[in-house]
Structures are given as C-alpha cells and as structure tokens.
Image (cartoon, rainbow, N blue to C red; front, side, top):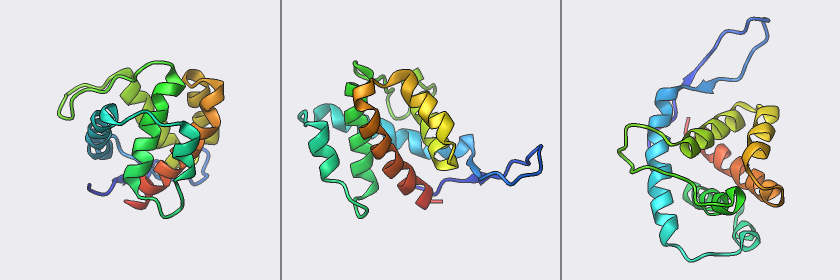
Length: 143
C-alpha cells in the first residue's frame, strides 16, 4: 500500500493544526478495507474480547483492519455495507469509517467520540476505540 498523502490546512485562528490526509490519499485505504471486508466475511465468528487480547504494539496493520471490521458488525448490530474493491462510489458505512479514521489520525477526540457514539452500540464502544486507535496509528505510520 502506498503512503498516505497529507495536506496542511491553514488555521483561521493562527494555531497550528495537525496535517490531515487528503481525500485522494484514502483511495489507497478504501480498497484495502474493502478487500479485508470480503476476507472477514469468510472468517469464523470469534469473541471480540478474545480478538482484542491477541493484539499488541507489534501487531501488523492487517490484524487491526480485520479486528475493526469483525467488531463493526457487532457494534452496528448489522453487517456493514462495503462495495467491491474497484467500485466508484462509497457506501455510507465506508464513508463513516474513513471519516472516523481521518479524525483519529488528526487527534480530534471529540469528533471520534461523536462518530463512534452515533452508530456503535455502547457495549462495543471501548473495544472499537481500542482497535480504531491501533489501526489509525498504523495508517499514520505509513505517511
């Protein structure tokens, strides 16, 4: 996967803002998420606590992608909609997940909290936050 490009947006109030991924840079992330979603459909169902216990700081990007996607179905209470890897348009679930990752990488905790609470069941918030932070850290390291 290629590195995520960043854009530096000027601040109206003069304070430095963290660089945000440009929309074009997510074009590399979205197909990876879509392929992982296809792969996760074939996985056997595992307990989310068990899945989180296998993760560590040395865990690769793909494991966090799989963890987020496997937990997403439990968190939403339904199977998320992911299009084919080469599809031209995004589903609402895909756009929401990309925005969530973007805000996590930008360090915007308030937006991350709002986005998670708007769609994820309360019982899954903590695990989803943990997995999301791990995934965002690994995506940010690709920059």
